Length: 233
Image 1 (tube, rainbow, N blue to C red):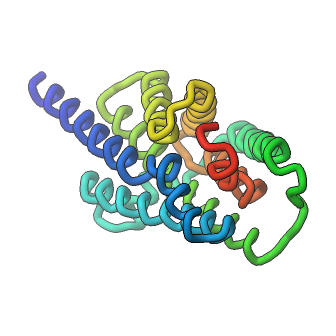
Image 2 (cartoon, rainbow, N blue to C red):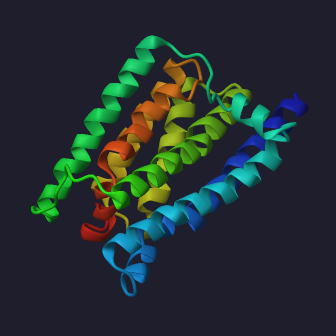
């Protein structure tokens, strides 16, 4: 009994540490960092800067997570996280549909703030931003879906608890630096959908990648531009 209690304590302490790191390192991307970058860089340069910082922040947090789980190798860590693991076909199809639908939601939103945006233009900047954002989304899912939900699963938490805790943390660091109730609810809903895909897909990241990284491949750089054009949304 005491061992089980200690294990729960360790898991919740790990989740608390990761949450604080997400708030401190990733949260500013949805608050002061874009404003600071925009003071000295073009919009394209600022978008690139934000996307690069996502990489830096998530890699720092993943390094902490890697030490926590004490995997024998990076390959083992990624495998245990569900990367490349078998998934249900239904979950993959649902992830594909979610990814396309959410991407079009972002693209339609940019029209409200920049009606002249050329959504079909393909150039070097768009390819770079799509790549940076798609990989950044994968790094994020290794933390907010895989690590957090697997840690809760480890101590016997229900699937609902796993999905809700993951979604709340996801929404918190997306909105805490410039809180907006609509943005918070929007992020919670999206986080629940991604968490649901992770569970439905037998803890494989494949449907989650389809539902998250696909969004950025289709909607960047416009999704990140919304941070500058419509902060807090």
